[in-house]
Image (tube, rainbow, N blue to C red; front, side, top):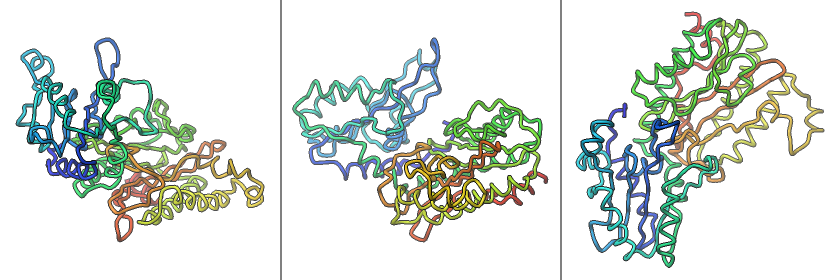
Length: 429
């Protein structure tokens, strides 16, 4: 890991909060993530399962956490199982976690090697009546890849069919939606690093620069600030490419007169930032570009003031869409008559603003959440309206990250320029 050590009080608190939501006589199992094969004997860089990290802070693969608060055997109440190291693994991969270091990171007192897991989970199953399984349930999750939690759940239910099995995901989702102060600080660090990268890009971009060069500037700033890298593949989209929402080829040359849309986020201690800015390649917005940008900015400013306790994501987005509709009419993209005659199932606004305004942010860039649960203090969301006019080759997205508090939203990316004049000043300084 590149980031500074995280106080294990965060992970102890997270486990305590989960235990409070468990039924009596219940045991819960959580597995680390799996490395994904790239080719031959190569794997993609390992990234820990977010739920496992949330509860343990452990980055090492092939690890298991068992929670059994009501166990009559104290040694089974909270156990972290790790793969032990040996001379061969130390030579090729470096040292694996020692028991003491795992305790320092996680705060878990009972650390055992993975070879002890079978005997200890079988003893736990004798005393447990209820079993929490961490089945992957995120509707955005890609299907078809190996998942150790899912395989373990199938094996356990075949072996112990008479136990009552429960879902860990609903409780974890409720917990992860509201960020504790230490989590807020980690997200703020990711957002700050993301902002530094975007400001670096503003000073770098000019006609003739490749989108790939801009991407290189971003990752340079991330790594030099101890981020793990991208929280997601950066969008660096110039000209017509800015109208492709998840464009990531990043291989075009930025031309004079183009807008450049950047959507990127650093990952720090597994927590994500997610910021978008749209800038003029030549350092000056054209009259039309400025008009579209300012319309999008007004929507963004309107939307972020709605991120207050009591609303919810579904109702919030409807309200933002109504405001966006008026702005799009002001840009001459359709008329009030067109709106009156539109198909309610396919409103005209979606042609130019086809995505949601906000999503939850945390250990995942599209973090665990429920769009029908009312906003609460401690939630962190993006605010990212966009206007995409394909026929004009203009794509604008503006995105900041906001913390919901009792006193209104706090913009975590408040110091990153938003106004066209500010952007032009930086680009021409």
